[in-house]
Image (tube, rainbow, N blue to C red; front, side, top):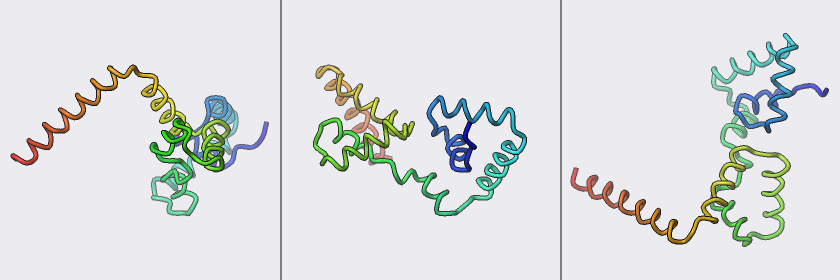
Length: 137
């Protein structure tokens, strides 16, 4: 079994690990006092507001594509290099945030046209009502 890194502990705290990797970290935490101490140290650093480049990178998810870019992947309008990177990020890295976004977009894409049209109409009506009440208030 390979050693658990600080980066993996950060990802574990962010719920950003694949299910199997999360289980591996939890099993290692149960059997290693040293690893539990490392986890406590990582948590204390976070509580103090760690501002290292790595912490900012993880917190802001700078490697994650936007929802719009994920939609472009589904529409197959990205250039090959960008599409390859996103597939790597989603399929190999298994970023749970991007996987969830991509699944949501895929489900919306499968939605029948009439259902999508009705949903858009409801969103517009609720937004128009909100904007009108904001102007009146």
